[in-house]
Image (cartoon, rainbow, N blue to C red; front, side, top):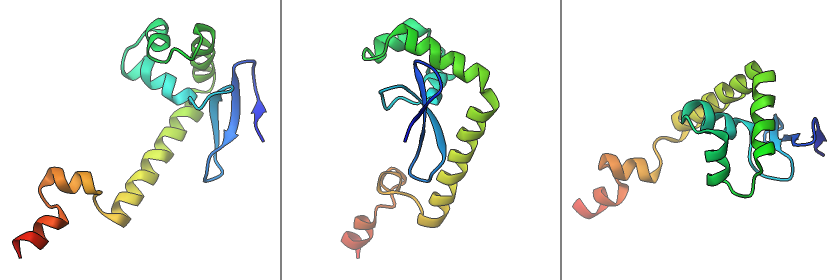
Length: 112
């Protein structure tokens, strides 16, 4: 069950049971808006142009939520990165990565 924290932001559990901040009524995470703004350098108007189902108010609310909860959002990103690395270590490279490295399993079969 979602807990709405503001008019535009709600907290939902992800599949692992961790709390995540989303723009209400969408599948867009606050951290996605943070990434577009802070990492990719997009202005709020550019984010809305790229995600036209969002309003400018929603984007500003997501950025406001990020700045009020910066450490929690950055910690969420760190935990996600650690989980991805754990899965990569456990499962090895995926099919695309294998193909890009030229180690596709089908190559070994066809050359043998």
